Structure formats: structure tokens, C-alpha cells
Length: 213
Ligand SMILES: O=C(O)C(=O)C[C@H](O)[C@H](O)COP(=O)(O)O
Image 1 (cartoon, helix red, strand yellow):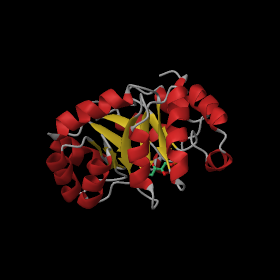
Image 2 (cartoon, protein in one colour):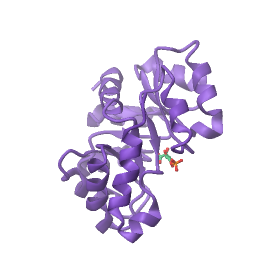
Image 3 (tube, rainbow, N blue to C red):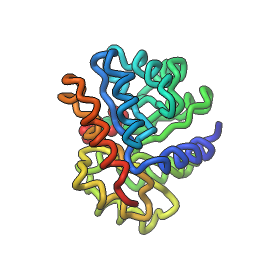
Image 4 (spheres, rainbow, N blue to C red):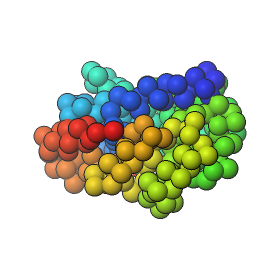
């Protein structure tokens, strides 16, 4: 799968909803009800970060939820890429990109949404064929203003900004021509997961799914 084909698929996923939940699962028992709650609220594309012990099992559990499109986040190495694919992840997100990771995405045929911060990083990824990229950590590196400026010379790159984005900040990103969707953890708050308040998570997801772009 070429980088351009990976980005084509990433763009399809980004268009399914305005927000991709960035999920940290500490307790495997939360995986299925969380995925059900988010899908019910209108957010089908789920990024499960490989930051916890049970992340791979959580991906497998969520992948069984009807309507869920489950991918892995915090994919840093070829080993992560392979493990994520084996668990059932259908896409991978990374805060950055390395030659080894890009090679692994091609070998494993997993669409990668690679991260970039600077114009040079954006250009290097574009040179390889990645026309859809994650802009991370969005709020710390200039926010929507920076992304709008990058769109001047590089309008052919579409972004999923992530990092520090809140429901209040999301519309400013979604209004930009070079933003397809945003990523954020606010739709899967730890406290509500621990409380098992899936109904409230569905409400938060519904509000996020209703953001216009
Ligand atoms: O894990 C990764 O691959 C990352 O790049 C980091 C995440 O995108 C951010 O942690 C998003 O979290 P918030 O800033 O709370 O919305």
C-alpha cells in the first residue's frame, strides 16, 4: 500500500466524522461499552493509543463493535505497527514519522496518518506521498493560525490536528480548508469511563459529531 493510497484511506476516515476520539484505555472492561457509546453518538472512527497494558486487547474488543472503525494511536515503531494490525487495527496514527515506521506501514499495508509539526516535516512526508497528515501537538505549535498559514504554500496537504483541542477550539480548526477533522481526548474522559457513565459519553460524542466543517 503506497503512502498516497494510505492517505486516500485516511481521508475517507477523516470524513466520516468531524472528531476522531483519542482514547486511553486503562481497564479492558471499558473498551466495548466505550466504543458502543462513541459510535452511538456518531463518532465511528476510534483511535486507541498504545500507551496502556491492555491497549491491544482493547483494540480487539472495540473492533467487534458494529459500526466502529478502530485504529491504533501512539504507533512509534514497526513492532507497534505489526502488533496493532494483528490486534485488528485498520489504521495507525503516529505523533511523528520515521523511515522505519513508513516502511512498516507499506509492508503491513496499514494506512498511516503520520504526524508533522513543521513545514519541512510536512514537505518531507508529502514527498513520500502522504497528502494527509496529523498536525501535532496542534495547540502548542501555533494552533489553527499556524495551520492556516501552512495552508498558504502547502494547500495540497490535508490535516487532522490533534493535541490540546477542546470543544471550544475545534470549530476554529474545522473551518479551515486544509482540515478534514480533528483528534481529541475530550470525548472519552477518564472520569466518566471510570464511573461507567456511557450515556454521558454518548452525549459528548453527539455534540462533537454535530460540529460543522
Ligand atoms: O498518542 C499519540 O499518538 C499522540 O500523538 C497524542 C494524542 O494525539 C494526544 O494525546 C491527544 O490528546 P489531547 O491533547 O488530550 O486531545
